[in-house]
Amino acid sequence: MIDRIESVEQLEEMISEPTDGVVETMRRLEGDIVILGVGGKMGPSLARMAKRASDSAGAKRRIIGVDLFPSGDQDERLRALDIEAIKCDLLDPDQLAGLPDAPNVIFMVGMKFGATGQEALTWAMNAFLPGLVARKYPKSRIVVFSTGNIYGLTPVSRGGPVESDPPNPVGEYAISALGRERVFEHFSRTLGIPTATIRLNYSIEMRYGVLVDIARSVFAGDSIDLTMGYANVIWQADANAMVLRSFDHVSSPPLVVNVAGPEIVSIRRVAEQFGELMGKKASFTGTESQDALLSNGRLGYRLLGDPRVGVDEMVRWIADWVMRGGESLGKPTHFESRDGKF
Image 1: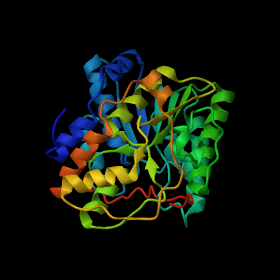
Image 2 (image 1 turned 60 degrees about the vertical axis):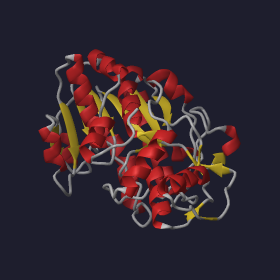
Image 3 (image 1 turned 180 degrees about the vertical axis):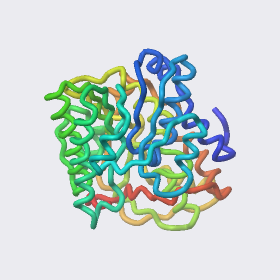
Image 4 (image 1 turned 90 degrees about the horizontal axis):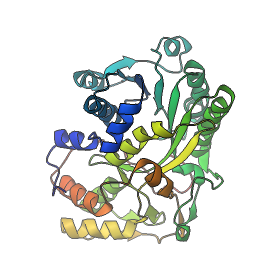
């Protein structure tokens, strides 16, 4: 494994590199792929991985990314990679109806940050839109992004909830995310839509994520709140690979699978690791609670493959990146929130 990530270009190459398993999934999969909400933090690398894997498999298909693309040149960057980019307000019925049909759909749309104060829009995006999309694509296979937040706080000693554990969401974001799952489940059952629901906890790369938030706090000399003392993290390329491989397992009723790293990460321990690597002293407030927002990812590894990158590698890469002034997306995760407000 490499010692450092030198540039954004190298990073984007790494987080979109398909595994052999993804290539085989793309070889078996029939038809084009539409990715709704492609403009988020994971969308561009997921779309690029799907494209690279399809090319490697010799599978000629369109990869179509759909989003508002409100700022920057993200749509042009996708087109430069031979990924189609369509600007669309998905809540507008006419615009949604005008999207191309495809036998494979990835639903990445969701509202989390800024949900507090915009609760109505949060529910519209997270729980109303899924019904519109299911009606638009009743003959498609659909992979749905969800979140481990739907489990609520669980004891660290249990090792994280498994997929059969009952949801216990806290806050309007998590409750509306469970609504998203239930609406897709309803249409999967009533219309026979093969579906996979991906409960993600938490994707990491150099420019954002739980580990990046911790690293930047340590480097800046800011204290870290330990009340949410534990988390799951997974390298974004590994999460992307697992999501794409889930097309092999869509079903009606939906497959539900956690996508999370194999380790329960101690926030204190990784902060101290960052301190050692950066020549800084990590400082803390509060003490670790005995529960946290966690997921157990064992089913995902069995069905979708093991992660390739571990926490220690991510910590080394991120420490080096932050010390060199590497690019940041400026989107803190607020992983420390225990009241469900984002």
